[in-house]
Amino acid sequence: MKLATFTHGGATRTGVVEDQEIVDLTSVPGAPTDMVALLEGGSGGLDKLRSSLGSANRLDLSAVRLEAPVLRPRKFLGLGASYKSHLAEVAHIMQPPKHQTWFNKQVTCVNGPYDDIHMPKVSNTLDYEGELAIVIGARGRHVKGPAVRSMIAGFTVCNDVSVREWQTRAFTATLGKSFDTHGPIGPWIVTPDELPNIHKLALRTWVNGELRQDGSTSDLIYRFGEMIEELSTVFTLEPGDILATGTPAGVGGARQPPVYLQVGDVVKIEIEGIGHIENRVVAEP
Image (cartoon, rainbow, N blue to C red; front, side, top):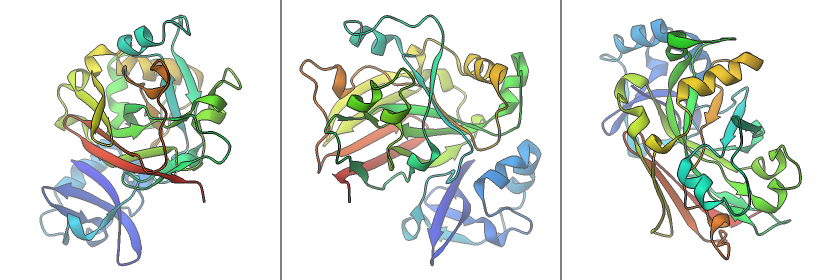
């Protein structure tokens, strides 16, 4: 299934995308209207939902506004230096980390799949990072082995927008990763059953129609299960948490000289089997 959050007629609710339509879950008895609540129902809740879609109200997809699938995640984390190709392009400025290197994106950076990205007033070192993001679907700590699969509600597209100048202010990278609007995700969450080749998906980023990133999740150093094992060793993962899994080669900051985003640029990120997000850069209001 493709799980979405959308706005129609001034109301925001959850839905299931099927072809060019979206099933309005407010017409399904007992279905949650919030994505986190929907995910908290677990796989059993989703199975029950599938069986109820036939008689539900449907809207044309073009008639609704797609929002970030999870509007208010409890956690939004990003993994740095996780693609072999990206490590190769930044080898002149950093050494490969010995362990998974996670950073925090403040959840106020969450942005819609087609909403504007702000060019900060304080810096012009704005960069894109096309990434596949895991959406957590169950509560878990110290999750190991086969149990990892039950933790994943699905996958979505993410632009881990980065302000490079501020990213290097501290080892945590949090400030440079957390500007408002710098976490576009979407356009929906695709459940794992629709992505059997999750470790072999094409990931591409365009800026103004120019292909900048052309990678594959097969280039990841860590598998998704390893990421969840690492994080859940430290803290409890919860439904709705977003885990951005890193970016392949082609970011603007790694070019020599660097090529950063400008006001008016349009960034499109597409992942095979999921879909695309597309965001325009505008001056910070």
